Image (tube, rainbow, N blue to C red; front, top):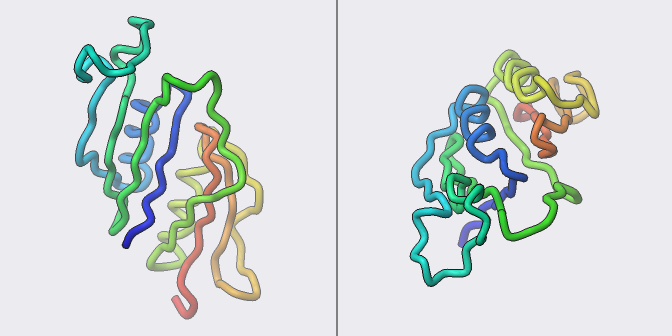
Length: 138
């Protein structure tokens, strides 16, 4: 069994895919736009949605994260969860933290804590909450 996060974006999934490729080395494994769905499916009637992302599977490190523009919902809100990234070193953790924080909001600055030599929390420019840490002893 696997648990894979599915993150929705309010019409900015393409931007998010590029941002996560640049900051996290994300690799798009599969991407489908709404216009690619068969006409008999329950897709949005608004032609402006045709080029939006209906579904994408993205590899980030060893994990798969799924993403979509979610043109079926009136509003996307990211609440009650964070995506957690464990970097291999203190320097890599700080670099990832700073890159993800660009254009977003730092909720807890990158710093040493009693459980890790490097940890920080942020909300990125797409409203997704992140925690970045390094493993104990790194």
